[in-house]
Image (cartoon, rainbow, N blue to C red; front, top):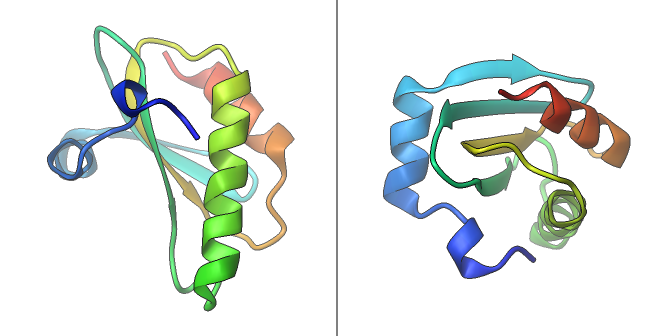
Length: 98
């Protein structure tokens, strides 16, 4: 899990969804805006995984990848869109953010 100061709050997520730029990768998409320090959120919809346990496992896997990756100075919301989540796809998407 990311430290609290590196996670987005609900109002910040709503603002990013309204005015952020979109980029997509294999099984992962991201909305982001430039910022002074990196802050992230990971979202998994019920359409991707019906069970809460599976959604939480996917979300935690996403946070583990983000914690181990050097992140650019952006506020970003990552959407995991497949049950067969590939951590490499999330790392590749992080490297494309600017």
